[in-house]
Image (cartoon, rainbow, N blue to C red; front, side):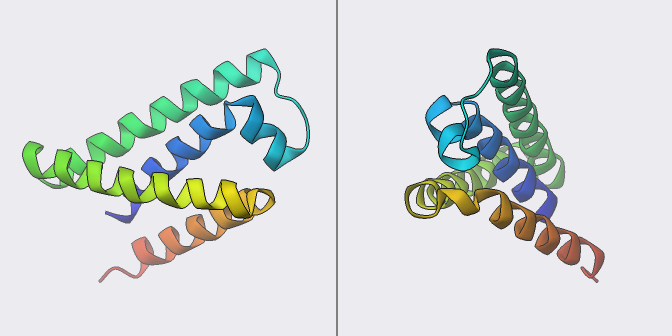
Length: 108
């Protein structure tokens, strides 16, 4: 489950960074057209992977339910980060990656 949550979060981060406003807030420069398309593609790819992780772990009905619930939490989290501490989005995402790795490795 932590992998599905992280993939969903990562997909939403890439979708947010594909917008010039958020990219400029986080990285202090304008986004190039090719990078914008690449970030959008990565965002949708990670969201689809996260969706399939939830469907594989649970049945189709529960997988969709959990995915939408996690999607909501991730959207609110990213919106709060971009609103109040946009400069720290990458650092918070890295900490979230480390937390995911710890949860996956010690999940016994």
